[in-house]
Image (cartoon, rainbow, N blue to C red; front, side, top):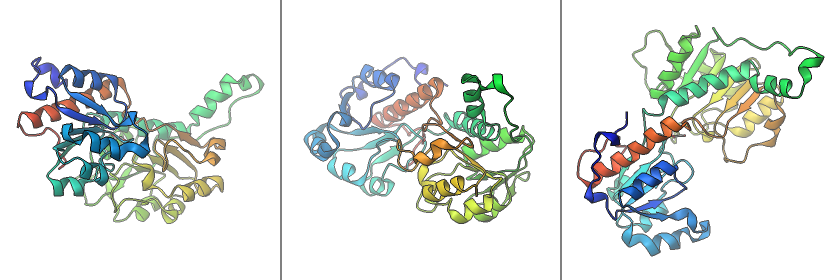
Length: 329
Ligand SMILES: O=CC(=O)O
């Protein structure tokens, strides 16, 4: 759905709105904000050590923050902006926004759920198949001409594998529905039991990992879910098990993950997210049973446009005093 195309009218209220942009924007989003006359203040033009000085110098003109998964809105930023009314993140995850501080200050927060669900779920399934069928390694095999000297070793079947989903929210459910089409029995662990009788609920991540072949992390990053994938969970998944992470790097104890993969205590991993992006533990580069993507779960043109439309629609709703479309706070 293109929310903006429903109305070609540009609300006067957006004119001269001071918007702090924390990280270079998807060009369409930048164009649309400028087309509405927003005054963009680009934090990334000032060196990180000067961020607070930049914020203080521009505080009087900043009413809104548009941020993303790279640079969010932390307590220091919010404190430095007394005129801040709304933070609109170009992401579904809100772990980089200090929600407690926003609530305290009465600052509204919006994110971009739903529009990216399909892409993230597609990537989770893609990673699982890529790991089990060793697609990147097979591609390298063909490109380097190795096929001429012999066939590629057998790989592992995806269809029918037991898929465990950590976090059966919108994205987790979309992953479950896709995996069902591959005849995979589905189980899950979530904060609460969900009304899906075909999916088996386990009361802990450890129980879930002990009873699946592929464990997919698709929960939000919160204090409760940070490091939810620890050594015990990894060992429960075991040498035939595969971990897929399309959540956040901080869900996983990364050094435990790396040693389990290097030592063969875990069968494989498909990782879109990492602890210190874009720095990746180099040990992973040598492993053909690991497939990595650079945090691109929702990065398609179509979905980025829909996310941009949602960011703008939320800002517009705020300035004209209408209900926010996707409020978090
Ligand atoms: O990681 C991506 C998002 O939170 O949208």
